[in-house]
Amino acid sequence: MVNYFFDTYALIEITKNNPNYLKFIGEDIATTKFNLVELVYIILSELDGASAKGAFQRFRDAEVDVSDEILLTAAAFRLKNKKKSLSYADCIGYAFALGNNLKFLTGDDAFAGMKNVEFVK
Image (tube, rainbow, N blue to C red; front, side):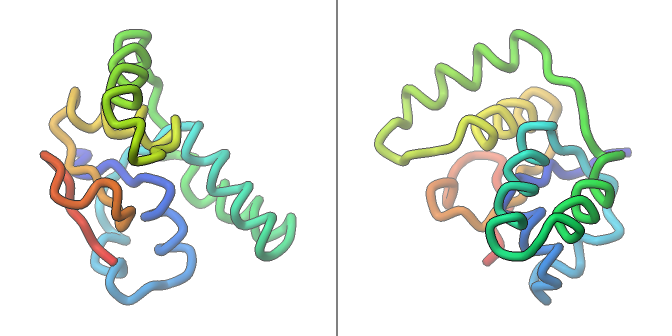
């Protein structure tokens, strides 16, 4: 049973072996293709193609399909929170987590204190 939605921040921190995220490694998780693309982009900008491909493959099986309803909800959420400069990927993930009773795991300050968020730095 999936318990967590990992946003891009969480994926990066797990890839970097952040000790605060190690307890989540064995969890059943969900993420979206959008978050995986952000993950690859960030790793490409910091490391290399092989590392980016490895991270992509590591989390690929956790990818979930996102309905049109989730996409519409995410767009409205992003607009409502436009002052926070949230990424589309994380808004889609947050909407997915809410719609599927998953904890949204992140360390992104913009999500601190929001409903259904497990905030870890």
